[in-house]
Image 1 (tube, rainbow, N blue to C red):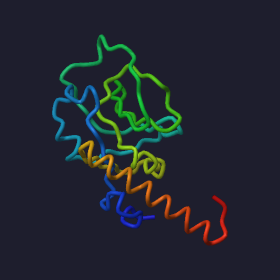
Image 2 (cartoon, one colour):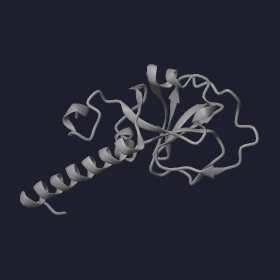
Image 3 (cartoon, helix red, strand yellow):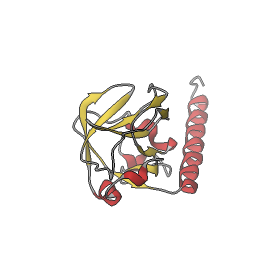
Image 4 (cartoon, helix red, strand yellow):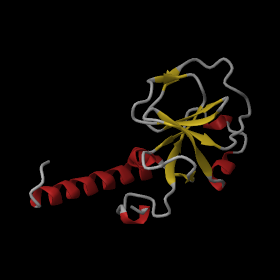
Length: 152
């Protein structure tokens, strides 16, 4: 289904919305992340998806200790960026450059290998609003299914 048909909670251009992560300040040129398309690689499973693309850090992960990660955390490993998905580990030891907003995490599961992904930065208030809109859309869908005789 095209992103434009998902409702007012999804980005109509199909971009994945993100918030800066704790180590976002380590990116050498943050604007390049948002000006470029990234490609999914063949390394996709229920734990995460590796992206092809170059993210440069001002300084590396040396001295980092393992920290908590969440669904949608984008970690920058020596092999490239990984977007963590629903069955991810709970900690990671690489820079967490940004986090996909909760409204968009499930959209990542719709990507296959060798597909382009574009990121766009949003504010925390926008992220909360998109989550609220998605929840409302899902409630409406559940209501339609129930009215049609489907089960909750």
